[in-house]
Image (cartoon, rainbow, N blue to C red):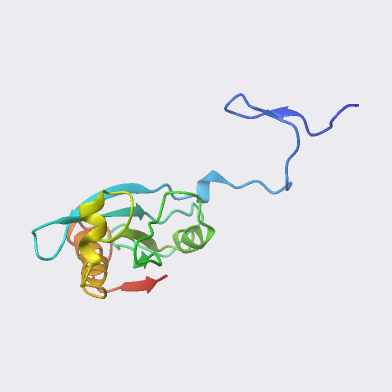
Amino acid sequence: AVCDDVEKSPQGWTVLKVSSPNALDEAYLSEPQVIKYPTSNGKRHAYMYYYPPKNPNFEGATAEERPPLLVKTHGGPTAATSANYNLGIQYWTSRGFAVADVNYGGSTGYGREYRELLKGAWGIVDVEDAAGAATYLAEKGLVDPKRLAIDGG
C-alpha cells in the first residue's frame, strides 16, 4: 500500500500522516524567552516566559509604540507553566499583545525552597510576582506601562 501523505519534514523526519491539512504559519508564532527577574522586595527572584507580539500583517502601531501586556498566572498553588505551544497565548501575541506567563514563587520545578514560598502567603507572593513581571517588562521598555492586565488560572 502507498501512503499519499508521506513526505520529509524540514527537520528530516518522515511524515506518514498529518492530522490536519492546516499548517501553522511560523510567521505568527511567538517563541518564549525565559526571564528571571527580581521581585518587588528585591530579596528574591521569580521566573516568566515572555512572548513578544508577532504578526507580519499587523498595521497601526508606530515604531515607538510599545505593546500592551497580558500577565498570566497558572492554577496551583504548586503547579507550573511551561513553554509548550499554547493556543491561548498565541491568540494574544498574534493580535499585538505581549504575554508574560509567570512561574511565581510556589511553582514547581525550581526546588523545594522556591515551591514553599507560598506557605502562609497565598495571594501575596503570587500576586507580587505577577505584578513584578509587569513592572520588570515595562522598566525594560518591552511593554507599555499604561496598558497592563493580569489574568489568573
